[in-house]
Length: 167
Image (cartoon, rainbow, N blue to C red; front, side, top):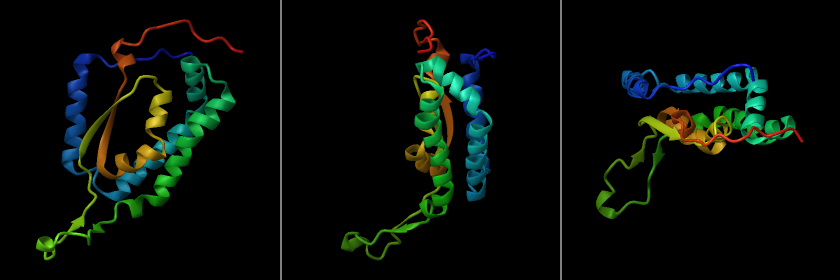
């Protein structure tokens, strides 16, 4: 890969968090259409950067192109498409009918609304970042939170070994 990885300085992390929190507090992330647009943008980013992701996965864990595409990138693209198809259903309010008698007169409905900002910590970027955006993670993330991603590697905590050689 020709570009050098740019690390986020530790001093900037609190500013980034404050900006993410302000964005969430402004309400801009609440509308369902905004979350769908974010999913579409994730899918577009994956398609436009497939070559870079394949190269990064090779450098990171030594996976060849086909394996990286099928095992790492493909499931995330599928997860995005699946999440777009199911998001309307995921965010529907759910009536809870099985409640104690003393709560029978209450409105026992679960409203699935965004809750705040989440920080996901991963070890191997970009592979783990892709896994975090796979189908299993997309549902809670795109229905309830605004997301940040921090890798211990960005903090200099990952030991650097020799780069894998091609088989």
